[in-house]
Amino acid sequence: MREVVVDQKKCLAYGVCMMTEPAVFDLPDDDDVAHVVRQPENDDEWANTIEAVVQCPAAAIAIVDV
Ligand code: SF4
Image (cartoon, rainbow, N blue to C red):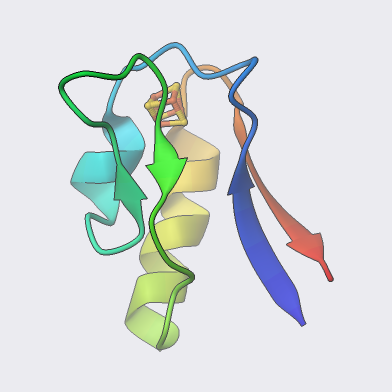
């Protein structure tokens, strides 16, 4: 099984992930790092999540095997 994670030490709060897949990523106003709020639940969400991995300017998002 795969899982998406954000490395909060690398995240620079650009917000690209949240705009790319808002169901999966959030960047709360009162926080300075992005969070995974839930795992992708369908092919479209996975496609957007993979796009977020590619687009993240800080290379802070990874998809890992669990
Ligand atoms: S796109 Fe990358 S750097 Fe920007 S908020 Fe998301 S995880 Fe953080």
